[in-house]
Length: 356
Image (tube, rainbow, N blue to C red; front, side, top):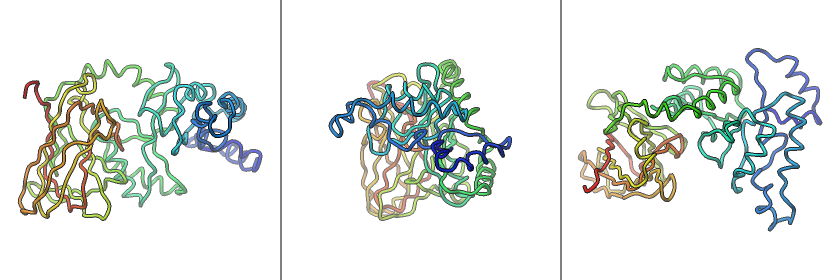
């Protein structure tokens, strides 16, 4: 992912990487395109109060298009929104002019195809840590819904680190497959254009359940930066654990589409999440969930923990649940861990029937 503006500073470097390209090398625009900016700030409504300048998207396209043609680039691998407003449909129209094979953004919908031409995905995360830990993160992000498309950024990592991370991810989850970015976006586009037929073919599930140490049954934990956890023990002794921290932490879960599809299509449905955990100290636990109203992190109920040192079951009603996999890592809900040593044995999700 090069910024092609570099040919004005180090043309010999750009020449070297292109003339020494191997079958494993693929090139795309780096951060935001031929330059480093937040494209949402090019929109007139976002610029007027700061500079009085008109919309800058046409100038941005005119600047990028020659580089796209010179270096045969048609993907922008990371569009930086930061804390700026998103670029919206106008911005996507602009990127369609020079990145028609795909874009990766921050403040955009999780996945789709713009104007039935340009596929796009939201970047999942920045990947850090040792290769075994980074590989385990990728394996966890793969979750239970397939196909799933993960575009993940690494920063200043060596080729050997990437090789070892990829090997670790595949060793932990054999469903993971790494492809070049152009193949990746062709697959995203093909899936998005046929996903309605795929969804209709899914066998419906009336409930989803995670039991530590057992195969996933429509529900899987997702490991992300603010939601670390370990699974240890065997059989009835297996648990998912998140150690106590001074910071509020989360435990994320993704639900299979075979269960969540009716929630995605029909607003107003209520889900019930029941967790079995060890009440090992006084405290509190909450939940955030992906909803049709509010956001992907709508506040749900909270429960107090009394420190009975016994296994207890707590239920959370989630009205107007959406479960569109819009939380970090593609999750649908997350338990809010308020400084507890959290030990979970089982999580169960059902749909509340009308009138209950």
